[in-house]
Amino acid sequence: MSSRPSRDSRPPTLEAVAEAAGVSRATVSRVINAVPTVDARIRAAVERAIAEIGYVPNLAARSLVTRSTNSIALVISEPDREYEAPFLNRVFTDPFFGRVTAGAQEVLRPSGIHLVIIPADPPAHHLVVRYLRQGHVDGVLLISSHSEDPIPRQLSDLGIPTVMSARPGYPVPLSHTDVDQRAGAHLAVAHLRALGRTRIGTVSGPLDTQAGHDRHDGFLTAAGPDAPFAEGDFTRAQAERVTRALLDAHPDLDGLFVASDVMAEGALAALHELGRRVPDDIAVVGFDDSSAAIACRPRLTTVRQPVEEMSAEMARLLLATIDDPARLPRSVIFQPTLVIRESA
Image 1 (cartoon, rainbow, N blue to C red):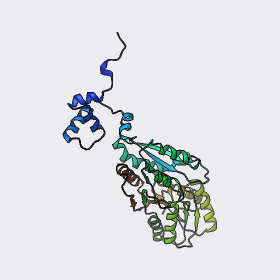
Image 2: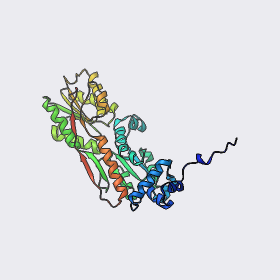
Image 3: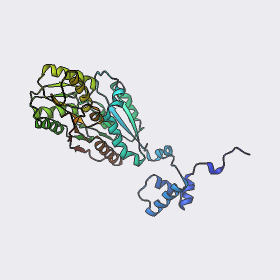
Image 4: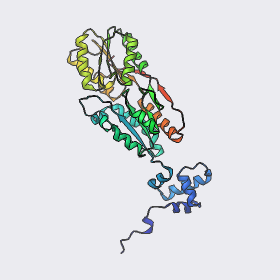
């Protein structure tokens, strides 16, 4: 018996789809490439034929015609700062990045678009920009926290469709989504005051990031310009250290706003070691409403930013920009809410 594969074992071709649908090969190609002038009945017939015979388009060949890669990069840009934990450890353990990915995938996956996650710490910034410039992806979802990050301007200057996850630190014609950071800090302080707390401090995020600065600014506006604070770096370990220092300097604090849930885990650990009961001695409010808030003991009262909804909107804005490069940049701002649990 011959071991040569039968003719039927070969993958279906464009010609086979055309024959099954009763149209020309060129018409099938126009349907696959989403040419809008194809008659709706013909399009439906071609799509039925594709489904019936199991045709899979050759994406490599298609990209030569459409100049589309069907890929979007999620670039996580790191500021030039010293951290204890390696960059990739923080990227893949911080729940924020997982939530961004999940939200973007909800929009991109149904369109058959792949999401490529690209961490970009400072030594690799130029390599990442070079990769993006070479056309490996159709656009970029950019998580950039540092106010002076050069990547937003570089991508804008190169004309690469880009949407940012937060308000840029300098004028740049890119769309972005964000939560009203200052309003979120106001919610935290108002809740602590409603509980009768009068000596309220904060562990801020890094003040050279937009989120860190805006949350801190909102806190000071609500709590007073002289309210005690210590600057963290959005990591658990650093927050644990600066919380101890903050309580050493201000042992009478009875309320604490911590500018991220991950940092709040460290703050709660420090308070436990110092013998401060939460919420009896000191009430604690975090920011994000991430999985870290549930992991805290006691479970964390926190300001919720709708990260999944925000990143889904980022993806929609990016697809619209790819379809219409002349589209004007937009900002979409979401409102925070307070989620009350046991810590405050």
